[in-house]
Each structure stands twice: as structure tokens, then as C-alpha cells.
Length: 260
Image (cartoon, rainbow, N blue to C red; front, side):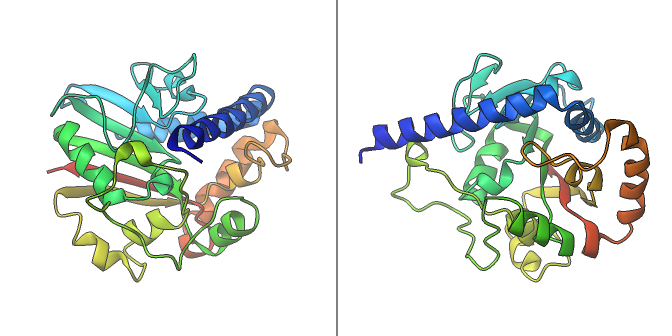
């Protein structure tokens, strides 16, 4: 199978998943409200300076503008609601022109995170930020993502930090390893020390673990909703309590990196 056929196949699968997610999004008001809360937390880490572009990579159905109206919505394939197409390994932005890059459930799809972070360094202004929202591997996280989600956790697979010399951004194919953010950014994880030495060009502003039980019990995009939408304020109280025991309950990791 040639590269063009592979890309066409990926485009078909990507658009199928986007269409499915959009259908769930439109008929699940609970999901929309939960995402709005996630996006508000992301917005709270947007700096008023440096002034510059704010862009979300891998926007999917592109709902972040409901909270951050000036955010550019991008993805690797086009869709009518997106602002532009962007490859995270080869961004179209000029050097030092971007203030914020937002990756919501995207970091674990980066097969070569070090290569992507180098590209982020190029386009970010000094003091610019990468904001990452990704799965977290607590006891509950292992259950949720290992049993109830189709993408691999891949905790035992080596992370390929940088691509080899023969690699091209155009040759990228589907990749997922939901445990990568935990392995790289969680100070309590055994591999963190190794990866922290590779992040010397970045200052870690925040590394926060969230239980996000309100999301887990909502069923997300494809699973049944466990509680009525009216109960969201009560479940959010459960979230705050569970946040005190992240080793057991954390299912989300919120990481903010700032360019030195």
C-alpha cells in the first residue's frame, strides 16, 4: 500500500471518528458542560503576555472557541469548522510568533514527543506556553484507559523521544500511547527523572492531576451516561474530594510548559 493510500485511509478513519464524536457532542449536554470546565482551566493558564497567536493542535470537533474565542482551531486533516490544517512536527507559524499551543488529548498521539517539542520551541515566543491535557495513569486511570478505551496505554513500550534522520513529518501514521504524559511529566513516576533531563529548555509551570470523575461517569463520547446532567454540581464535589488522592483517582493530567 502506498503512502497516499495510507493517508487516505487515515483521513477516512479520522473523519468517521470526528463525525461520531460530533453526534455524541450534540446530543449530550452533560459532555458539553464538562468540556467547558476543562477549557476554563486551560484558559486560566493563558498568559496576557507575551501577546501572540493561541492555537489548539488536534482540535477535533473544535469546541474550544466557546471558552477561548481567539484560539485557532487546527488539525492534521481539514474540516469546515477548523481554521487551518497543521502538522505538529512541521507547523506553518513563523519563528517566535505563537504565545500558546494547546494539546487536548493530543500529546499521547505524538510518537516522537521530543521532536514535536523542538518544533514548539521554534514557533513559541520567549515565555510562550504549551498546555497539555492528557490521560493520567492512577489506579482508576489504568482501569478507565486500559479496559474501557480502545487506544493502548503502552506503559512497557519504549518512548521514542526523537525521530531518526530518515524520518519525515509527511510519513507519520497513527500512533497512540495513553501512558506517555504520566511517564514523562509525573514526578512520582520512575521514568520522570530521565525525561526531565530532556526538558531543560522548558520551565514546568504546572503539573496537576485531576480525578475528573464527572467526565468518567458521563460516559465520554461513546459510553452510557451514568448520572443525570442536573447532578453535575454534586459530582464535581466528588471530583474535588477525589483530587486529594491522585494515586488512586486521577484520570487526567494537566501540564503547562513554558519556553525559557
